[in-house]
Image 1 (cartoon, rainbow, N blue to C red):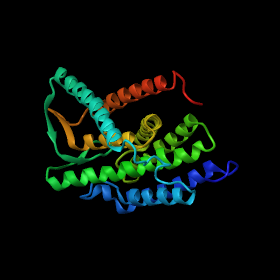
Image 2 (cartoon, rainbow, N blue to C red; image 1 turned 90 degrees about the horizontal axis):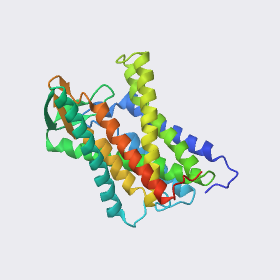
Image 3 (tube, helix red, strand yellow; image 1 turned 30 degrees about the vertical axis):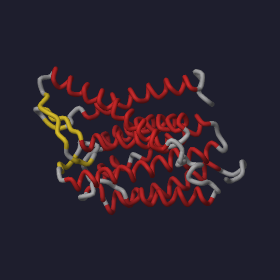
Image 4 (cartoon, helix red, strand yellow; image 1 turned 45 degrees about the vertical axis):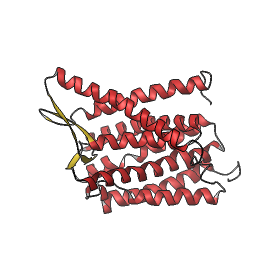
Length: 280
């Protein structure tokens, strides 16, 4: 690791900007998420190579940044179970709202791609489920490895866990502005839509990122946060609620319920583990 007097935040920002540039290139030039792949995965493969190379450069191994060999399966299953549990509650809530409104029709399973103005695509061939799963695995390995792994480890060398988690979570929130910026540049949304979507994504993604930091801290690895992250991304691409007036119309409600519930549960468990105190 660099010495304590080095500019840790500057180094983290330099790595972040490098990854962000590759992300922008894929979103605006390659646009792989708008192709049959349905996922912008190339910059994430590059991101995996970047965080691994930087970790090696500073003398860190995979275990140091959260990819240890202990309790891998147990933590993966815990994350999957936790993620599925809160989304079951969220889907039930969404369906009950539609039933009360006399609008609920059915649920359907197919692969779509997430978009800020609603999911797009309707693929039922088995190969698309495989692509969706593989794409989301690449996504969680890269994002957890970079934000909750490398960045968190580097920042904690100089700052406390909570301060480091806040910084990495803010970066994670800003990471998600690419989709609304592209939609604005493509003329799909106006300035007000751009600002609303950017603010919403930065805040919600930042809070979710902070939750993942707490999960990583409590379990001592990235595996539970990775599998919870995987459920968050995958389930909305596969499990859809059909109403009389559209598809996934209350998706924002579903996501809000799931993420609010999961954040509250994780925060309660974290405070209990640390005797009711957050580490500042």
